[in-house]
Each structure stands twice: as structure tokens, then as C-alpha cells.
Image 1 (cartoon, rainbow, N blue to C red):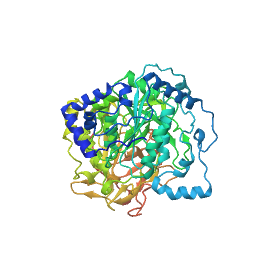
Image 2: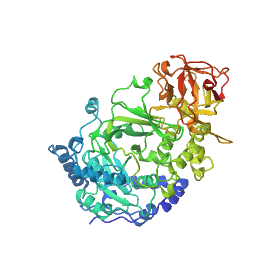
Image 3: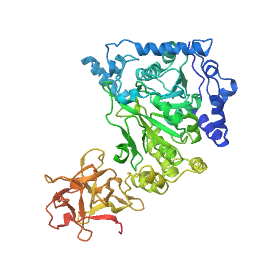
Image 4: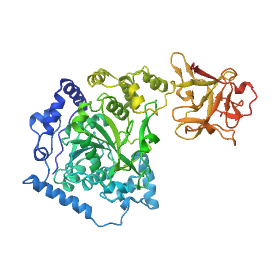
Amino acid sequence: MFRKTSQFSSKTFLGCFGLLYLCGVFYFLHVAFHDRTEYDSEFEAADDADSVALGIGVVPPKLKFSSREALMAFRYKRYERAKRRPQRDGPGEMGKPVILTVEEQREADRLFAKETFNVVASNKVAMDRSIHDTRHPECKNVNYPKALPNASIVVVFCNEAFTPLVRTAHSIVNRSPPEYLHEVILLDDYSDRPELGDNLLEYVENTWPDGIVKVYRTNERSGLIRAKLAGAMLATGDVLIFLDAHCEVNNGWIEPILYRIKEKHSVVLCPMIDSINDKTLEYSDQGGVQIGGFSWNGHFTWRPIPKSIKQDLSPTDPVRSPTMAGGLLAVDRSYFFEIGGYDPGMDIWGGENLEISFRTWMCGGSLEFIPCSRVGHIFRSAHPYSFPDHKDVHGLNSKRLAEVWMDEYKRLFYMHRKDLLDKDAGDVSDRIALRKKLKCRSFKWYLENVYPEKYIIDENVKAWGYIRNPQSSLCLDLLGKDDKTVIPVGLFYCQISAGVGISSNQIFSWSQDNELRREEVCLDATPAGPDVLLLPCHGLKGHQEWYHNMESGIIKHVVTNKCLDHNNVGSSGKVSIQECDGKDSQIWAFEHYIES
């Protein structure tokens, strides 16, 4: 029987982590574990000192092997058997969508609110299903050297549905050459679902009796960020790879990651993320390669590769990225701890991806996407887990990264998150000391050298702030809608708080290219009119070029020669373009004008 591990407290872990890190012991502990032989780390329980230091026990595997050669022979046989398996014709095979009966669909709809994906479809799909190869043809012709580092795969979960969790582990073991797969760590962050108890332990023991897959548990909710740190402390492979618990790795996924890390020690890598449909379990690629950005409110964004970079890239080249999405990443294990791991002061989930992105770049490393490494991921429309006391953990975590890493540009974060100005995000002195110790560069350097395309709302512009009509006291406003979608530009009473500033829904700027824009979207109008929409900025002027006369106050749409007008629609109405006649409804003023 696969025994449960001993359990540990996240509070104890957090305190120990900080103490060990500050004393310099933490790195020594990891080196000591890393220097063990694979045979020792996999088949002998940790001694008492190690158990106390890590706060966790090590479970021996079901099978014993006389030698490393016998162990690897067992694993190669399993790997080759999975590669040669005949094509099956079952639900979801080759990544095809799962078709449900009317009754099954009714049950799927009932469970969707709890699981936030189609668990009925997932339960019909084989745990080790086949998927089609989404790599570019040139990736299949790359010959990687045999001598590559090995990897520990860390999968953190909390009340994850059983089948996507186990399917994640199957895909890793079946599609990773044994010499490169050191271990798969399934770290249970205090789940209370019955099927994740003894049932999971027995399944893992019987499916992988050689101990390649291991299950560990916390004895209280730690949150994704701290649980990942715990998983990293347990890992003994050369490379750490973090995956979400609802992934399926594709063919040839691990070699390009390990090769790049062998080439460059100080790089953090992300695979290309394919989509597993949350309703049908269909596996599909995401089209062209995109990279990561961020918005000034602290959220990750996807963006196209800049043309200046794209023109020099082959389909197999690593692609530099300013940020990463966060759930899926790979890094040399020693380097991960050298640059500070994750911020243990961050709670549950959110913000850690931007924090490690900024820190990696600013402290001498780099961040890249690897086009030849493909991993499928179930993208859910909502989180299936709760946040304690409905706490805004993403906002507070983002405040921590702003205070430590964004320097004077944190003003733009608070411009969008004024609600966080007086909120306590915890002590960040240790992280500030880490930044000083690592001799990290400024956030201005990051913007100029890593992310020069990032639009800065109040720099190198003609005007910024609210756009107000004095006669009505109305301002241009998003009306609470998401500006990542096409939306009409609305009007609302100007939201100005003394000492705090304006609402983030009312922040616009007039760029040097005569755009009226937010971060990534611009006011756009066509001769068909009269609606004014927010559309992605294209930089070609045309329908997105506006002329503003600061003396008369008019804002003229250059292509149509018409003027921006509130047309007496009132608050919560939509702005439009009308024939210019100088009436009061066409007079506008920015909050701030920049002298040229």
C-alpha cells in the first residue's frame, strides 16, 4: 500500500523558508539534496534530520530494483510501450472533442458550476489518451544532444477533479524520455475531496510502482504560491518544471526546454500553451506564437511578437518575452533559489507570474517562450477554488510586486488600483533586501530594454487623464466594460476623489501619434459613424487619428472631419461623432496637458 506522507504546516514552512533563506542555509540544503544519487532519493526514506528540515516524509516505491540499470530498463520498457501503442478509437482520442448524450450533457451542465469545466466529458476520456502533434514541422527535425539535465515536474493541486489530474501525470510519464524525467511531484494543497485521498494514492502506487510519481500533502491550505515553493524544496532534479493540474504535455515537449537551460543557466522558460476546451476536452493549438505583456492594473496580457523581433526568428528559435502567464514554467533549480524563488509573502494565487518576470529580467536573467515545447491546458472561465474571506489576493500580491519592483512607475499601478493605496500587503523588506543583494536594475531599464513597446500613459504624450465636457461634467468612460473587447466609448459623471485622483475607467491619453488611447486600445470611428469604439491600436493613424484644439476644446476625427460629441445623451450614454458646429457638447478638456 502506498503510504501517505507526513504532513506539514504552511505557516511553519513559511517561517522556516524565510529563516533559511536569510541565513544562507536554504541553498546549502538544496545542494545537499541535489547531490544525492537518484537511487538514494527515489528508494530510501529521508533520515530524521531531512524530515525535520523539510517538514515532510518521503514514501518509498512499491517495487524495489537491484540497480539503477534495472530501474531504467523498467522505465524504458514502459515509455516504449506507450510510444508504440496502437491507435484507439475512443472518446477524445487524438484530442478530438467528446460528444455527450442528452442525459450526459444535462449532468455536465449541472456539475459545470462546481468544476468550471466539463468533468463528465473528462471522465469518458482515457487517462492516457492520444493527442495530435501540434509542433511546427521544423521542430520535429531538431536533433538535441543526449546529455541533457533531468527534471522534476511539480504539479500543485487543491480539490482538482481526479481525471484531469491523473491525465496530467500520465502524459508527463508517457511523453518524457526516462533519462530526462527525474520525478513527478503531485503536491496536494489540503484537498478534501474523497477521491483525492486513499484512492489517488492507490492509483499512483499501482500505475507507477517504480516511484516516478510521488504524492505529498499539506495539513492546511497553503495557497498555490507557497505550495509551489514547497514542491520546489522537495524536488531533487536539475531542472524545475511547474505545470498546472489540468494539462497534457505533447510529443517532444521536454527536450527543447532542457536543451535551452543547458545552454543558458539564467533563463526562465515557458512552453507554448495549447488549448484543451473546457466543454469538449478538444485539444487544439493556439495558432501563432504570442508572448506575454502586462497591464498597469497588474494583470498578465497576451500580445503579438513585435515585428522587429519576429522577422529574425525561425520556427524553432526561443522567443524573448517581457512576462509569462505563470502556471507553466521551467527553470534551473539552483537558479530558481539563487534569485529568490517565489515571494513567500504572496497569498494563494495571482501576481507571482509578473513578480518573477520582472525580477528575472531586472536581476540579470531572461525569460523566453519555447515554440517547440507544446503543453495543452484547460482554460477555465472561473476559478474552482475559493479565496479566504473573499480577500483580493491578486490585488494585494500585485501591490507587493509594485512596491518592490516598479519604482516610480508604481504610480501607474495605483492610478488603476486606488483601492489598494491604504491596504496592508505585508512586510516586503526581505524582498527589497533581495533586490539589493542581487544588484538588480531599475524598472525604467526594464521598460526601455525589455518592453520598449509598453505604452506609458503619462510619458511622451500630449495630454492625459480624464477627458471632460465642462458643460455636462461628463467624462469619457468604459462604463465598467472590459476594454480587451470591442466596446463603445461611454459617458459618465467625472469620478474625481480628493487626494486619490480619477476612476481608472476614465483614464485616457492623447499620444504623439494623435491617438486617443488607453494602454492597448484606441478610439476608432468610421465614415459610416456615428459610434465611437475602442479597438486595438494599430499605429497607422487612419480611423484612429484625432486632432484636439486646446483653445477651442474640440476633438476632431481626422478622416471624417467630424467632432466628438456627447449629443446630450446623458450619463451612461455613448459618445459619438457629429458635424462640427462648436456647440457646448463638443467642447472637451484633458485633466493634464504636457508642455512640448
